[in-house]
Length: 195
Picture 1: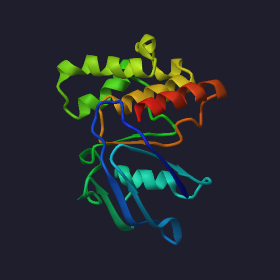
Picture 2: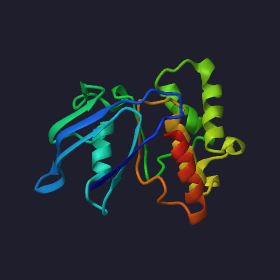
Picture 3: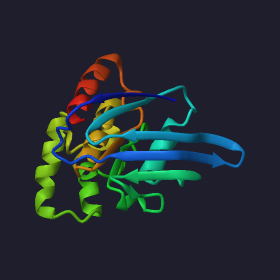
Picture 4: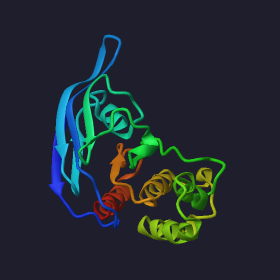
């Protein structure tokens, strides 16, 4: 796994957090997915994990988000050990390669969902959703269900759903993989503006 970084200011208005991975490992039986990985991601740093399929990129992000248990090592977010914290207590948003949208909810409801489950003041929901929808150019599709959207539109809804709650850590798993060439260019620019 290779690491590429570029210092950028985050334009979402949220404070970002420093992440430290120390001797991080993940094993399933004899299979080693991540082996003794060390990495520090500074506050407001935009970082890309590069490597072939199966080298541990997604597993590393899932451990940071709390979706996979750590076999060995430590994960610290702003100096706080989070290995044993539930995902909801880490203030991490992750956009999955598969979008993970709720098919029974329209775009607006999908974007609003993280605000509801986190107990964010309801009077702020519409403003936050509209701002996120504008950032990813999806305002005109708020009434549609995910099945009525293209793959690129679904990806943008997933991005908006993550940014709407202004997390301290924002992880994106292969955010361009399901997009056509033209949409990759525009989405790359949107991601850069969000970071």
